[in-house]
Length: 202
Picture 1 (cartoon, rainbow, N blue to C red):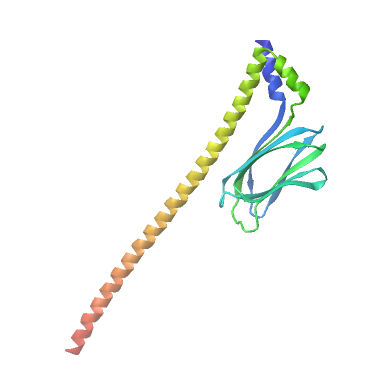
Picture 2 (cartoon, rainbow, N blue to C red):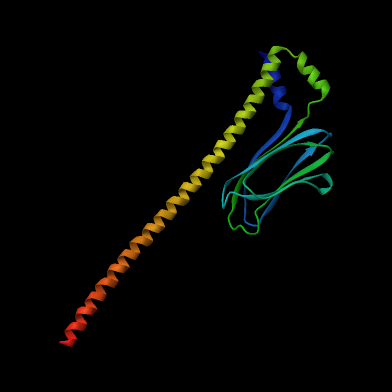
């Protein structure tokens, strides 16, 4: 039992992950950093806009020496995995564009982990069944977490669409009712004016 617990903790410590949710104000730019202490580590970067505006945001990923790795404008979500070839800080920046006037809620995940090397793969082949099971379970849990994030994002967007549709229907109905009342009032005054004009002629 103790051995399994140690293995689980070891698998959990293999990756350094950060899950954050942040409201980004209109015209605001915010950056987060991940440090890489040795080359050839894998960095996974995932983000999704959950609320606000058209659910889109601008992003940039920069390596050491301000070298731009990825850039996108008006993206709803992104999922990247790349190998950090240089040691140093990697910047992950979000910018709520100049055309947007709404605050946006962004959820993002930054994971730094060691890339598998040939000697690691050879060790994995020699691992016993318990260790392989623990690694498989950890990988499956990671996949389940990704699916949960995706479906939560879909739920938030669909709820926002429903709320927007309800609001439009309410305002359209109110405007429609107002038009009916105005037309009725105009008709009453028009008929009244018509009969008043006829009486004056007699």
